[in-house]
Structure formats: structure tokens, C-alpha cells
Length: 126
Image (tube, rainbow, N blue to C red):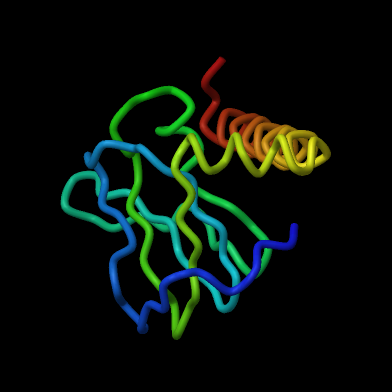
């Protein structure tokens, strides 16, 4: 996905958004890497990393819910923020963008299904 250079630059460790915040935007990594984590029982649990060209924050925006994880810059990162209106405008300009987003989401669900199956097989839970 091509997004230009309009994003915000974050330094290493800068918080992009925090768990529990209202999700009103989707984010696209333009340069660098960001890390997704959740806090459970006082521990930080790394969920994923997103690199250049990848997006994040879509679940809370599409579901109109609070953020279920936090995102932090890992090193220097440039991140573009798109609210719903701007995302829809981009999709109108390039309808294949919607397919790219759906494809990425499908791959994430597939990865989660595989991880869930692995966890269940090692824990003996049905």
C-alpha cells in the first residue's frame, strides 16, 4: 500500500495508542516497526510487530470498541493515522485497497486460528 509521507514520527518507546482508548482510526506503518502488546496480570504480553506497509488499529475502529491492545514504536517509526472518513475516501480512490485490507485481515485470522489450535493441542483443552 502506498500512503505518502504524511505520518507522525515516533521515537523508540513512544506510545501510539493504549489499551482501553477509544478506537477511532486505523494506522499505517510508513517506516520502521511498531510493537503490539497487551497487559494481563501485570505482565506485558507481546502480540505482534507491524512493519512498513502494514496497518493496525482496525479492529477497534471497525467494531467501534475500545482498543484491546497497546502499540509502541520500536526504534524510530513514521505512522500515518486515518480516521474512518479518510479511510473511506482512500478506498473510493483505490477500491483495491479494501481488498488488500480484507486479505491482510484474513491472513491474521488464519494465523490466530493456527496459534489457537497449537495452544489447545499443548494444553489438552478441547
